[in-house]
Image 1 (cartoon, rainbow, N blue to C red):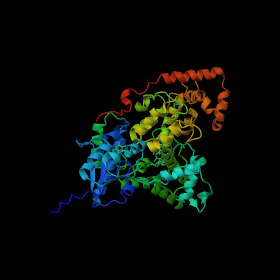
Image 2: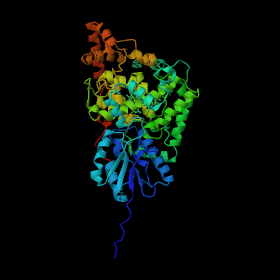
Image 3: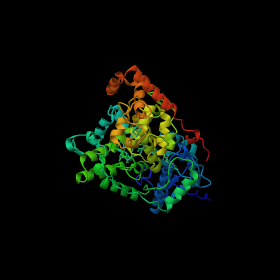
Image 4: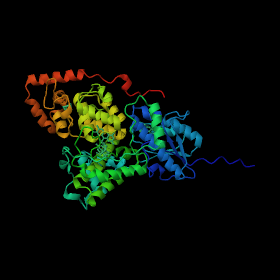
Length: 530
Ligand code: FAD
Ligand code: DLZ
Ligand code: SF4
């Protein structure tokens, strides 16, 4: 008598995570609908390792549910574990273990993750599961992790600008043969205009939540009530079709002015001429290739000028790829550096928004409303303040990772640790972007309605950015004075009388001592039970 045949094993169990919502994902490429199962899991660990903005959690879970629905409609077997499933263990590893028991797969297939933390977790999966685990390279970037490492060895990743030119040559984007379109690589000098009075940014396309998204919003409201941020109005696209519509809307209405007003800020105008596409790019609903192609097509069709299109494409083909490469070649040591020995606690107003500094209050309020702030708000307002105030890098990094819908560590950390805090000693930027109130006054209309005066250095009405700026130069003289790009500010500092210096130091100390750190209830809770 022959033994009864054992039940056929599922082919592969393919885990798709919240930032991998791309139909052409590497780990889905060889999917066999007859034998494979796609696993997607909503786990509280991912929502709580930093206290993510409510809207960010809702955006990702809604996008995951729509992605799963679309896969299932195409005949793919999807095993989807919801957040409110009573059996949910709320961790990637434990949910994989449970799914392996359900499906008895021959192997697990996954695409490399966006965060070092999860990459480390993955290294243990084969042993834990007792199965082969195939980790596919994430091919949604122009430059793979391996290729960036090769370029770094060939010394082509020292500065973003040279890496960017190399990427232009390799991809042919914005190239006419061997030369850059327009005969110039970079039009940044044209892109620093303040917003003229009377110029109204276009209304932006937002997307009303459907029933599936509304269900997620209600779940997040109930489960994460203590997290930062508003849930309503929720206007993010959560499907590929709507993300494409958002991209079309940007290209048609805002891209033409993106370049001119890239560095501008205006109170109450949350989006200006920015793309509003980073959440879609980072979760996978849009790809970098198609976004760059859409911008280049607009240029070639005469629908957007070169300074706008080059400036926009540089952010994606240049900065986005560059910071990812730095993250993966330099982690985990990268996160530990603290070049300026900054160690002050993050003030509570980053979470409450309650501060008399109009620029800070406006940027934090926009962040609370939208889980979004545009680049100059992040860099020159909330980032600049953290730099000047000497906030501990890890604390300000957690804030940025928590509050933005587009924040994943591979892109957040180099921007905050490197570009903003100069904690990496200059790997990302050759000098810190430190600026006084004069810069914010030039590029925005915040100061006109602020209790402080951007023209005063000391005294009760002096703009805090002013004395904090000079105090920053004084506190970091040993680390920064020999940097050639800091020569001008240090020459100006040298002209200050000892009495003026003393007054600055006292004003800064008084201000910093008067701002309490965030109470424990606002700090990330890594060990929170579910
Ligand atoms: P646009 O201004 O329209 O730019 C187009 C695209 O270019 C963006 O969608 C983004 O994909 C890319 N891009 C622009 N600047 C950068 C940059 N410096 N690094 C990487 N990509 C860039 N971006 C994130 O995607 N996630 C983050 O967590 C994040 N944290 C940041 C923290 C700080 C302190 C700073 C200064 C910048 C951060 N950025 C981050 C970069 C940038 O601010 C956002 O990508 C941008 O604001 C997203 O809005 P947008 O789509 O309207 O961008
Ligand atoms: C950010 C996030 C959140 C809030 N929730 C989930 C989730 O429930 N399930 C999931 O697969 N992914 C989630 N994510 C995104 C992950 O944090 C992200 O995929 C990893 O950090 C990638 O390294
Ligand atoms: Fe910000 Fe200073 Fe201007 Fe007030 S005066 S809005 S604190 S830069």
